[in-house]
Amino acid sequence: MMSGSSVWSVGARSSTYPTLDDNLDADVVIIGAGITGIVAAHLLALAGKSVVVVEALRVGEGSTGHSTGNLYEIVGERHSKLGSEAGDVFAARASAVDLIERIVQEHGIDCGFARRPWFYFRETDEDSGELDRARHTIDRAGLALLDRAPPQPFAARAGVSLDDQAQFNPLWFVKDLAEAIAARGGRIFEHSKVTEIDDARGIVSTEGGSVRAEHIVVATHTPKGVHLVQTALAPYREYAIAAPIARDVLAPGIYWTTDPHHSVRTHEVGGETYLVVVGGNHKTGQEENTSDQYSHLVRYAESRFGTLDVRYRWSAQNYRSADGLPYIGRSPYSPQVYIATGFAADGLTYGALAAQIISASICGVEHPYAHVFAADRHRPLAAAKDVVVENINVAAQYLRDVPGRDHADALAHLVPGTGEVLQMRGQKVAAYRDDDGTLLLRSAVCTHMKCIVRWNDAERSWDCPCHGSRFRPDGTVIEGPAFSDLPDVTGSEP
Image 1 (spheres, one colour):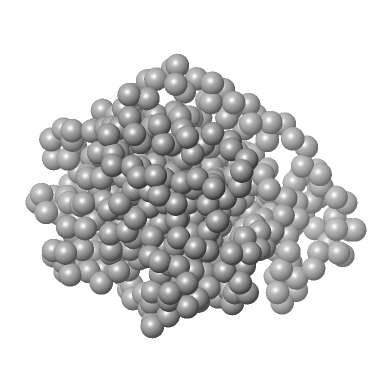
Image 2: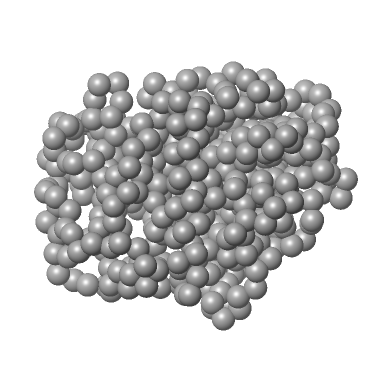
């Protein structure tokens, strides 16, 4: 998100790593200091590799620090897409949760890691079939699924449960693990936005320096730049709120509802118990009133838990693959580059798994489940329909004529804290008026692949509806495949 703070930031240490301002050499350079990048750096350092991590923001403060904090072996959605590989997928994810637990224990990381039961249930008599599909897939994979409804205050009509899943504070985990890496000589750089990846020469450049390495790991949630795998990915946003509640209101656990999907849990920090509610999926840049998503979550939570004092609200981005599984491993287009993307809303578990698979490959070891998630896999029957649908959607965003109101009328009515795409001297302009009344004018053309951005009123950001690049009101890149900021077009104003 990044206009709001997540509950995971409460009490989190402030990282103080330097900005890259030199030209370095390493065995491996990792782009991104979320859970994928930091766990990969940890495993590679243990294997004796010299590692450099470059992060555009701060360690853990991207998607990892805006997640749900849940860890589970089952997948979050699209169970029907898992075929005969369901057992392997669940086993691989279980190994990733176990890895996180071992790291927590070995390094004494204070992040609230605890094993918890998972509940999946429906609260209405209407049945979309999703619960039955999940039950069928999980049963077929041989997991010890229980027919067990969640406790009050949920009024479940039907439900299943699985024990021994887990929860933690993902931001605390990643920040503490990064400190352990740095203490062993690992090199981590913050505020070091990557501006170019030269895979042919093995050089990653930032605004202040560069790293030359034999292996490049792109742990940025979606590959930076133009990459063919983006044709099989769909960017989505998901929202969350947190509010203090009495400790005995809800037993610790992971609670998922169907129709529509919500994820509910509790989290204890600073002597208080917080209710955390997540939901509100929509395609990035394709929702008109994003701030309504928070209102929907508050209404859902208060209908079950009473009036709440919502103190934290945040959102995060996820990318869904065409066949329901992430792309992890060596890029099919560049043997030096490794990618990890398409995690959907399962990024914490898949992030740790990606770190396992990629670090093993770099060390010359074949991970037992690498083939299931291989970035160069080809499953046309499973993926073709969704690939076509997704690219029709992307094409529609290019063809859509974003209305650009006459600037004279629009600028006069643009109130502080809001943005709008306007037509100025024959070009689309992203106009934003900040809280002090200052007008910022940037090109509305996404620097990734030239789609027109949309204003996101919940996060105060410019979001690209094609491939998910996001920009701050002043045009600087927040996340996504775009390298470059939206250009300043102040001269467009007569």
